Length: 139
Image (cartoon, rainbow, N blue to C red; front, top):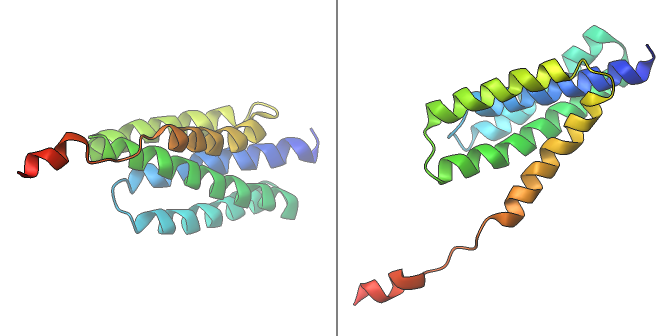
């Protein structure tokens, strides 16, 4: 296999790491920044363990994209009434599946593109907050 395979594997594994860290730190707003830094660092280490600087670059980008994409999903789930433990359990399972899928050729690249795209789509679909009938209830 060529370098393209290993770059995709490290990107996919790092996406899984980013999703895992956001899931474990669900509900703590400051922790998203910490999860981003930790996922980028873990992606760097995974990339260097599996290859050289090009795999490390794939790991760094995968960790950042996975963290940013999962943060939108997790905060949306918690805002809509999900519990912290339940959300963390579900997101941890998704992270394990993403890490397993990363070993399929070219799937890591797809993961690194789809996780943030899913988050962007969910962000656009979020309804605007408005007062509605609550403004009439103040009388």
